[in-house]
Image (cartoon, rainbow, N blue to C red; front, side, top):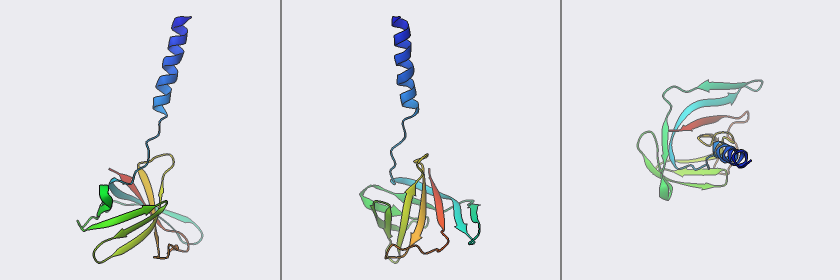
Length: 126
């Protein structure tokens, strides 16, 4: 009986570690892997070969694929990136099944969608 109880406890402990999801954090190096858009009738998925990379560091530092350094701010799902001569606004969603993927949808500075039919870039954490 003790062995059965011990085995049951061990199985529960092991399965609890298997199903632990990683906590999402934007900090890290991300690479564009897919583009999603629409022509009004159908959704279009396109794989991106050698996609641009972007690095989000501690202290709200961001570095783009051209090694430009800027600042970022993330409030909820809103991501604001500021480089010396450029400013970008995105709606940022993490993949609920995989915290190593995010979807960035470009927005206006008023946080309104730019693409009527939807357009997003999927990034994978490296």
